[in-house]
Figure 1 (cartoon, rainbow, N blue to C red):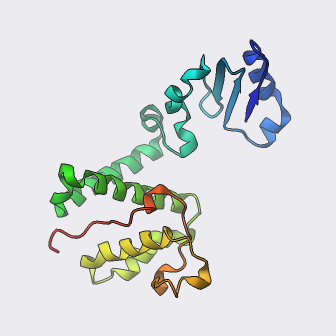
Figure 2: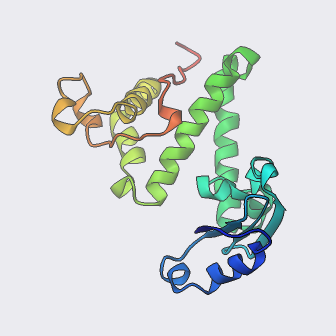
Amino acid sequence: MTSVCPESQVAQTLNLLRENPKTQSAKAWFLLATDGVTFEAEDRTEDEHITDVFSRLADRSGFFLPLAYIMTVQKIKNNPIDVKATSHLNRFYVEFLKENPDWATEERRHDLNHFMACLIFCFFAEDTGIFLNNLFIRTIQIMTEGVMDQTHEIMAELFRTMGLDTRNDDREKGGIRSWARDFPYMKATCFLEQRTARNSAD
């Protein structure tokens, strides 16, 4: 929740936001008050607080990363679940580069970052219920059973599907495979480019 206030009333306004019943009912995550000269912000889940001049708000963007579901290193260290997930992702990253060594080059760094961002988004979507019944993992398991060398093609089709803003009844006309049509359109930057890895044997 945010509030604009008269000059020199930032601290008082932030306190009013804390006490506002709507803050409690909406379970507000971040509070921010500003008079256009200074600002104060509060992360209510971590009990963290920052104060700075308003012109430096963009420089303090790291404080607001959790709003984009990007946790800081310290928060990851303090969360056993995130530590476990990070460990799994790191092992996948290492194994992935073993199978696709060309992706470790400077020329493919963007592709690798993009691919990992898509994966992280999909894992997050499963954890939060955007994808029901483990739709992402289950689809890959079913479609690659016995044909693991086609995993990259399956994932490419899923990423392409999620990047297409089409209505359900237009998906068949758009050439989307029947097994991918249950995936919703995701307005996320990681699906704007449709590139995915190919097995190094390809």
